[in-house]
Length: 78
Image (cartoon, rainbow, N blue to C red; front, side, top):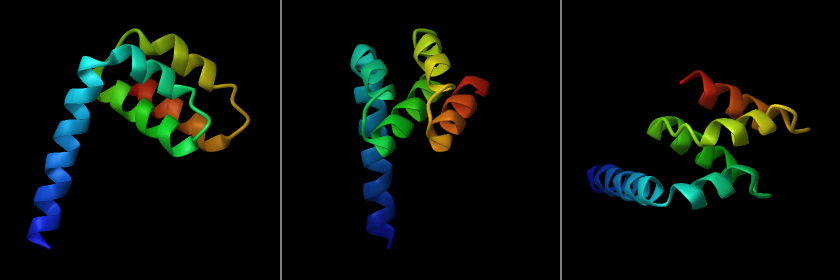
């Protein structure tokens, strides 16, 4: 179990570095068709406090899927 926790931490750090160095791609992923990808992109944008994401997140507030709207609200409130 300790190895899993270490691996998860390492993957999380790597994903954060990739997101911070590829903001334009991260913004595209906010509107990805795959809901899990979009939600993770929203979370990463919130973690990075990326001002460029605000417009993309605002658009998600009118998405038909409740999970996406909630993800956008959570990201915008951080």
